[in-house]
Length: 374
Picture 1 (cartoon, rainbow, N blue to C red):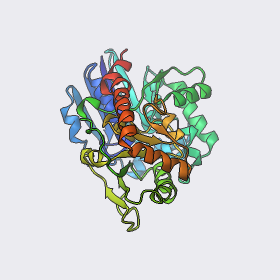
Picture 2 (cartoon, rainbow, N blue to C red):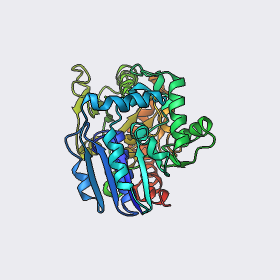
Picture 3 (cartoon, rainbow, N blue to C red):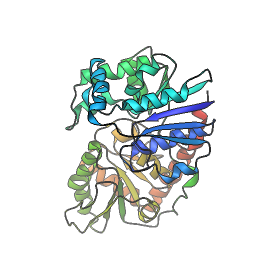
Picture 4 (tube, rainbow, N blue to C red):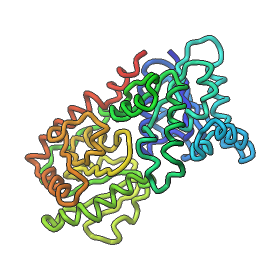
């Protein structure tokens, strides 16, 4: 079956959101031809990786001028869509999608993320369509400093999406349960975050590398909170016992992190993280807030590295603490002790092998392809 997927961002690979889009497109393309309608926002052009996907056609929608967006914004606000989401609605994304699905041919329609789902609501009212959620927004977003909406507004918005779409794809078991409680009649499918595990060569067994790696897009507030905990609390506790350990921070917005601390190395955005993973002893995922499942957690498992994560981070994945990773509370000393445990090759290598096996079984493109079968 042909699929038409709409997203409000230029497809890239520079964030967790973008990498989820790529994984879903990759898996769906294996089921048949796929058209991607995207708003020209966030990147100059789609990542070159999309050129390698057979059967995928890209349809760019230029950003409309402010006055052209106003009617769509006002209609969205009247429909109960919060302002932060309504501002991202481009009429051209909906109209281009509608043109591509016109006719009697069976087409699977996918709205990628809440903004695209809001834009396609009129289309979803006329024919079956799928909402691919990136997170259950109402589970955490209202608590963020940058949030411009209340919990009640978020719940009304998500209930509208869940009720309007014929099926919604949720990123974790926790998000699925939350969506079920929010809208009992919603049709839900578990569609986890995945990476191209087959294309990732796992690192060699660790041999005492004294590097803790943290990779994240620091434009996302929960990632900034996780890094603050790591630098200000967990790592100082670790350094009192093992001052030779280095913390390497990579990802968008990480330039200058560490304020000149010689024990912290800021790498900024790194397109190919292979060398960083190869030099690390373990990966830290100390999320304090957020939803879904952290893609960098999945990527670290695929690279065959031991992972230390908070309960918030592990909640979105089918990991067995103590077997596939080490789970530690967001408290300085216990998290530091867990990092030291993971840096021990005897312990860390066993975790890494199990984590890689889990990534192959549950969090690969092939696993996602099977999940998305009609």
